[in-house]
Amino acid sequence: MNEHQLRCFVTAAGYLNFTRAGQDLFMTQAAVTYQVNELEKTLGTLLFSRQKGKLALTDAGAVFLERAQELLFQMDAAKTAAHQAACNEEGSLSLATFGDVVLPLLPRVLSHFRERMPLVHVSLRQSLAHEIVSGIYQGDIDVGFVTGYGGYVESHDWLRSIPVMMDDHVAVMTSDHPLASCSKVSFGDLAGFPQVLLSEKDLLEREPSQEYVNERRVLLQDPQSVEVMVRAGYGLCVCVSHAPIAHRDDLVTVPIEGSPMPIWACCKKAPATPALEAFLDVLDEELSAAE
View 1 (cartoon, one colour):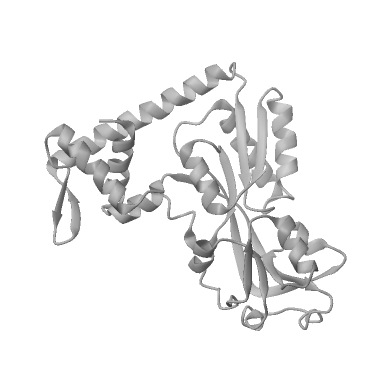
View 2 (cartoon, one colour; view 1 turned 90 degrees about the vertical axis):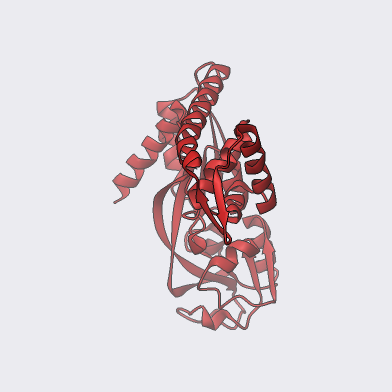
């Protein structure tokens, strides 16, 4: 019996579905099933009943679930304690953002955080949403800032999700684009034009307002590449309104009506390090002050 098997079992028990558990754990359904089967062999008892394609906890499984959750909590606490000791009690904080979704907010938060905990080592990187969620799960990222496309954040019940802001979408294009003179557009207006997007295929398909997306699209992984391609005339970009690409002098920004987009700060629900707790406190203070 090992930690990996326990996490597979607890996640599968939460969903009563091996496929959904695999999505959370970034594993295939077959791999989750194998780990649970191995755990059952070790224990010498069935933890799930599998009848007519439906998964349910056995009596033994329900009892074991409570103990397994306690074990994982203690393991996470032990890892946190070891990490703090390795960092000489000053700690570190790893942040990641999906593009530049929190660029206006993050400098203020980090400035106040640095005043409060000046010896904590802070790292910051840009990543795609699934990379951020995976990094948080693996422990490589402490806090990730992502957009709320299609309920992707809410679909991971092990994530602690903090609403940061509600933004709107804009279409960014060159000044000679056919839509450049519009005061506002709808998603439907964008459907016939090529797009250069900072997004991921799976994430984009979750979003119900995707009728603007067509096959003439380029999906890129960083804002700088998107800006280059838009300025070169390869297509328009749909982004949140405060992203830097929307404020270039040589580009035109057109609001998209009816296009709210939530921005989330995400971290594990597991025990937090002092550095993470302090950062979340500062973030909460900044959000409260902005209301």
